[in-house]
Picture 1 (cartoon, rainbow, N blue to C red):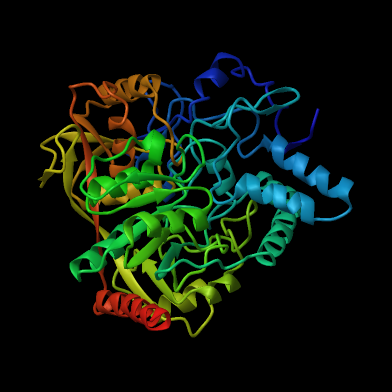
Picture 2 (picture 1 turned 180 degrees about the vertical axis):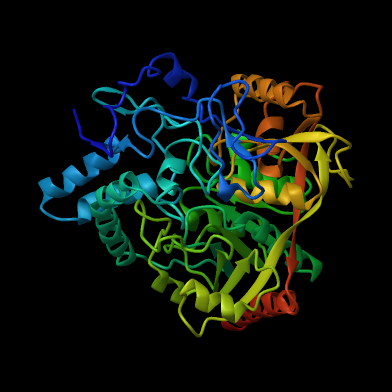
Length: 506
């Protein structure tokens, strides 16, 4: 049996390891906002609730099954990552295993692999064993368990032991990055390419930023097109998933982010594909855009670009500053030197240069700030009509994004009285069973209805008949609010690249 990091029993040896594990396979994690003081006994579970200070307002609690198998923080090393480490030893170097680790963890860390991957001694469920998420996170599954190591405030012997266990994998990951960086081709297309990406895993506001850049271009009579990987969709081939004025695509065919972009910006042509070069060329051939915006393109360097925009979450930062999987970094901080512009999301009015210094990012890179602010609510099944509020009463928050803490904070900023927050892993494909569980949680908390994110609503509405007619479901709409002068600076840099490319091609 492989060793288990930290104290506690072997994987699968816990008394709840049978039916309890089966209930955890769908990425389910829930939190309730307590109406009482901290630490009050949970009526359902009969045990003292653990306050989660990282979830914004005091009172967020884990679900009734707050402890998983073994000691808190314990868990076996992922079988696929352990296999990559073994491959390095057999190959006598880090290049082969580094590439494999990179493929497992890039471009998004999704917790455990598809299916019921496991280790001897008990299957490891896809979403991890812990129902109560760690301090500083509101998500579920393997990702949350690893995130405990990434951000400040996570202490304990088990966490330190797991960090040491993941350090060799970070070295292999670094080797894979070097190998990948040495073979980039910088293939070009016949129009300017603006890449929007990040250095850390998820939660950087990249998708709203892509939408905002397209809005800026359209407002100034430029014709943008978006190229995206299309995470979570069926297949990987290059495909046009949205044409200007056409219906919004099914997220299962396009991915949830392209589906969201198509709903919010019907004038936008969108092409998806694992091969970004082929997707960009398809976009040019079919739509002849003035500029192509490449979503999540910072690490995909095969496609040449005229401007690299780096989105950075000023609230979360780089965590412990380590590479995946020991930390949240997809690349070292020095990689930010490739950026032509840094956009600090959640800047909260702070000076961009001060934020750059605090983040430890290289000097000399132009930087601006912005915030994601509530802009209204969209009712499920009601099109794009924007409402000022969802109505009276308490509401249950549900999300499947990388930064659920931020979603909870946005709900409170919008004036919503939050009855609880149910968080799934990023890009979670909701099922009928998930909705039944959400409805039970809503009934337990007495919430008037459910509020989710627009990306999650795109996944839910894409499955006909999944959402019940009652109780009501809403999505919180967020808008980009630029710091003083930032919008003008962002568009100036885009326009410079567009004009420079036009001069080169004349």
